[in-house]
Length: 429
Ligand SMILES: Cc1ncc(COP(=O)(O)O)c(C=O)c1O
Image (cartoon, rainbow, N blue to C red):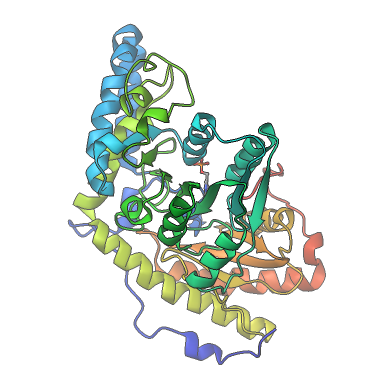
């Protein structure tokens, strides 16, 4: 461990105040979150907007009242939503299909590709488990394998690029890389990776689950062959709304996960047909993006979350450093603007299961929702920052969760088990 830094030097002197709507209400009034819960984990499942939930309910009732009128027209509504969403992401509506989540987008790509037998698919050790598992299944089906490129937390973008390209062999057919990594909250140099892959004839898939609205024009920036992003994370759409963006020239080989009545249509219209399904998250997603723009302004949300992330991470890291006597400000190269890591006391959260148990434990004991992750045997708390968060949220974490975590590390270490109401094994979030 490095020597402790002066914790006070981490404190920010002028933290941002609460973000207000155009009519002067606190931004939190737009969200359906339980006010009794400290929600520092927007990164896992987002948080939907009250007005959008109401609009969905109205649409569901409309569908329930006249199903045979409603469902045949559903694809037209999805097409309209696509047109409303595309300008927010800075992409042409012709290059963008709507899917229910980032995992479904990745699965649609895996299912559409015609990769050679015995090929290799390169992923990184920061990849989202479910998307990496999909790559693994595809590779094994072809008698090939997944190759994991190892990227250190503090590797510069240049070193991260070199690590990924260093895993390429003459059998590499595809690279799957995260725009913003889930366990480590860092940005990867996706534009450089995709450009290098293209010159080598390697297909690129960018898992940008966290990127829409967090990173402006993220899909254009990455210029991947295939790019998937959730609108229900930073974009605040209701759960079940995501996009799949592809480069011109590749559309015709791309097929939806669900074979439905769009089969004879070109891309992206063929994705508008999803069978019988609750498509209200998709068709209200454009309204969610508009609502945040109208009430708060996406530029203001991005500025607020970036400033709050600097202040909140510094505050929690200072408290953790004071309590443990070692520097706990995680050194992450290219950190995400709205998710940050603080290092946990030694012995806590060293595996994915142990980190998940901590999440449940902190929620059950303190009513604080935060993500815990593990990377190379070291545990971290991953703090998220969104429009509704205020500095008090992180001060509360510093005051109550930090001593609790230090105490758990002393008494139980990674024998910590979940005492939460759920008690269900969960996968990495
Ligand atoms: C990087 C990354 N990819 C994919 C996903 C999966 O998202 P979904 O469950 O919406 O498909 C997540 C979820 O947190 C993620 O962080």
